[in-house]
Image 1 (cartoon, rainbow, N blue to C red):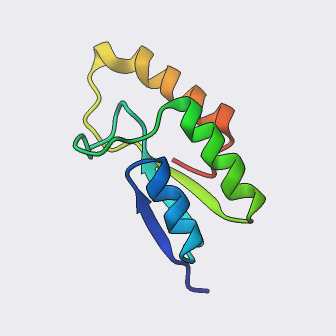
Image 2: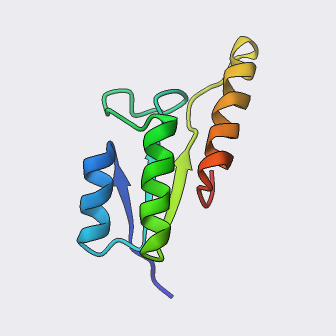
Length: 91
């Protein structure tokens, strides 16, 4: 089955993607996202958006796509815990 996967650089873009037919949205958080020029999502915004998407039967995927250095591992763990807490569908 074909799936329409759309990017969302911020909350407004995520809502628009779902409104215009996306089956799933991928997004980055304020840390560990290669799209540094995007506003991206705070953990709170991720939780809000994921609940909204799930209520509509849609999926949310989180991109963690930067090089991660040893000194960033604690921050990465915090970020992944926030993703889990938000009940996102994948990383």
